[in-house]
Each structure stands twice: as C-alpha cells, then as structure tokens.
Amino acid sequence: MIRLAIQSKGRLNEESLRLLKDSGIDVDDTKRKFIGKASDFPLELLYLRDDDIPGVVADGAADLGIVGFNEVSETGADVKVIRRLGFGRCRLSLAVPKIVDYNGLDWFQGRSIATSYPSILNRFLSEKGISAEIREIKGSVEIAPAAGIADAIFDIVSSGGTLVSNGLKEVESVLESEAVLVCGNDVTEDKQEIINSVLFRFDAVRESRGKKYILMNIPSDRVDEAMLLLPSMRSPTVMPLALDGWSSIHSVVDDAELWRTVESLKRIGAEGILILNLDKVID
Ligand code: ATP
Ligand code: MG
Image 1 (tube, rainbow, N blue to C red):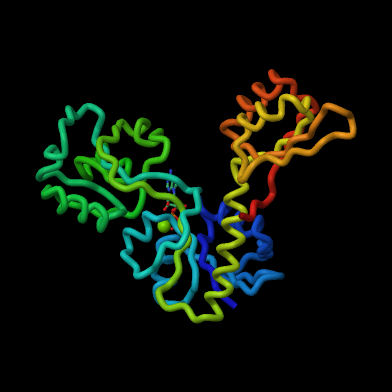
Image 2: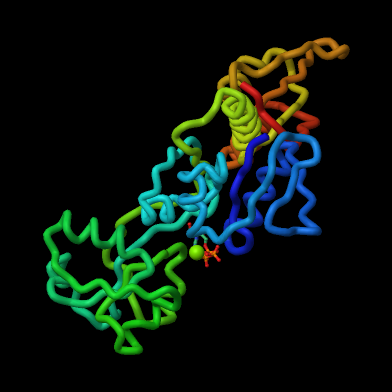
C-alpha cells in the first residue's frame, strides 16, 4: 500500500483526480474525508493543503505527492520530482504598477515587494545582487501596491488578467511551474514496485493526451504519399481492402497537426476518414 497526497480543493484537485481516474485508480470522491482508498489499487489518497504536500512527502507520511513545482521550490522540502504532469502551468513573476517606468532589475533596489513566496524571491534577489524588503502576505498579494503595503509584488501569473485588473504589469518572470509528482528519498522495495506501476499508468495516460487515432481508405498507389504525411509512433499500419486497388491506413496524429493532415490526405484521395479519441498509449 502506498499513500499519495493531493490538494484537497483548489486548482490542482480536479486534474489530479482525473489523472488517477484515467489511470484506473478509482477513489470514491463522493464521501471525501481526510483519507480515501482506491477500490482496485493499493493506494490511499491523502487530501491536503498544497503548501503541506512537499513536507508530508519528505517526512514519509505520504509516499507520493501531486503538487505545483512552485510549492516544492518554496518549501525546499527534501523530495524528488519524478514526473512533470503537464497541468497547473503558471509562472512566478515580479510585477510593478503599470505607471512605473521600469528599466531593469535595479528598479527593485531598496523597494518593498509583497509575496507569498519569500524563499524563492529571496534566492532570486540575492543571486541578482538586489537588496529589497520582502513583505510576506498569505493572500490577495495583487492588491498590495494599491493598498500601500508594498511597491511591487512577486506572485503567480498564468494569463496575466489578474495583474492587469489590479493596475499592474509583469516585468520579470522568475520561475516556470506546473504540477509535478514527487516522492520521498528512501522508498522501500515493495513501495517502489507500486510507484513504478503508478508511473507506468500516468505515462500511458499522458502519452495519449493531445493525440488522435486516425484511419482511412486510400487508393493503393497513393499509400507512399500518405505515409509521408503520417508520422506515427513507429510507422502507420497499412492493410489491403477487399476492394482491389484500395488500402486502409491506421495511424496516430497530434491534435495540433490533425486538421492540416486530414486536408492533405483528402487531397491525395483519402476517403472514409475516421478520427477517434485515444484512451491510453503504451510504448
Ligand atoms: P490550498 O488551499 O491547497 O493551500 P491555494 O489557494 O494555496 O490552495 P490554489 O490557488 O488552489 O492554491 O493553486 C494551487 C496551485 O495551482 C498553485 O500552487 C500553482 O502551482 C497552480 N496554479 C496554476 N495556475 C495558477 C493561477 N493562475 N493562480 C494560482 N495558482 C495557479
Ligand atoms: Mg496553498
């Protein structure tokens, strides 16, 4: 049995549960308590505040955690990042009132900066040789300049909309973040085996995201051209149809390339094109 800590509510909760569900690790989410148990996998879920996850994994109270890389970096907890999970993307940035005529990091010399991420900010400022006063506040950091609490802020940005609506502009991006899977440093062999199985499933789910399975019929003399349009995991599967002179091709295409590929395939005579969702991809 292993224990996985995830955020109990908030921005990472839903995607964390979806990843588990898609991995066949079903946890009854309806009667959510502090701990949940998967019905068909040796895993317990621990629901926590995101700030507490790195520490709990470092202490061994949980074996794995899903948490923003920003929290791992801020807490400095002794954990290993074993996968990036591709959701919860954001960055930690310095922002100043939009009326400021900003001309580089020196602007921060001797100023005050409000943040909920004092360690990351402190590290960054010392690295750059800037001495500024860090004012730690837990929430609503973006209102600090207007409220006269600080000259600038250091906070999470994703679209930048919150900054703009508070009369601020982003001037330096300091740390890129996304949700990551972390584990502790001494894992027993039994647990490692279960962790490997979690990794195998997470990888298969991630690999399938952003891809479609495509199949079509095509005149056999155009198959070579079609192959050039269809980079597949190894190579596309080609099968003869019962109808003489026609073949069927099956392949996997990235969502980003999908429409361009389909249009090119139609131009060379592809017919009966089917596009299907991929559930899992196991390499
Ligand atoms: P908790 O109650 O668990 O302490 P929280 O309020 O500290 O929650 P959330 O706002 O739910 O945290 O954000 C969780 C994580 O989601 C962040 O630490 C970050 O990694 C990620 N994230 C992605 N985009 C954003 C964003 N626009 N604003 C805040 N966090 C974001
Ligand atoms: Mg938090």
